[in-house]
Image (cartoon, rainbow, N blue to C red; front, side):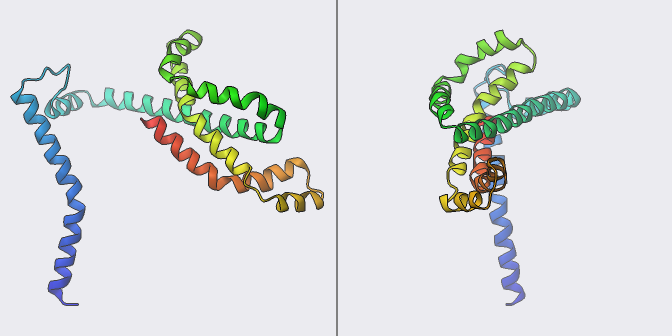
Amino acid sequence: MTDVSRVSLAGAAIGRKAIPFIGAAVFLLLWEAACRIYQIRPVLLPAPSQIITELAQSPLWFAQQAAYTLGITLAGFAVAAAFGVLFAVIITEWKLLDRLLFPLFVALNSVPKVALAPLCIIWFGTGSEPKIAIAFLIAVFAVVIDTILGLRSVPPDTIDLARTLRGSRWKVLTRIKLYCALPHLFPGLKVATSQRAQ
């Protein structure tokens, strides 16, 4: 390969990587122009220059607010992950609880989270607890469903072999079922993360 072709290939690669940045820059310029031409009130849609000015004036305050929001998001996600796996294990290990609790869980998930927000504020106050509760409600369903699918995907022959070798129920759960559920659990966590970010 000649030097000219290498340079052209490198230039093409750089151009492909630069396209998203060019698109973002064009979008910001159009946004700024629309705000100035149509004199849109900052309360409705602030211009990018105004946003940058505000960020530059109080960077520490915005950093604190961003850290608080990130902490709430991670706390809600952690609670959803822990409770989701526990709930999935409970309803897959005990068939009666599966019939009793899973329909209620599905019905709760069908309720709009906006409708539950006032109840969370009444129950938990106006601090960080209701925000964590809403984050939990948004994320937990995906974790539970995918974990259940994973726990039920274990081949019956594997479970029969473990029981033949005198594996206790706890060992079958922790060493076989949960291990086989991991390929389903991690996509569920990924979906829960994206739902929480929306």
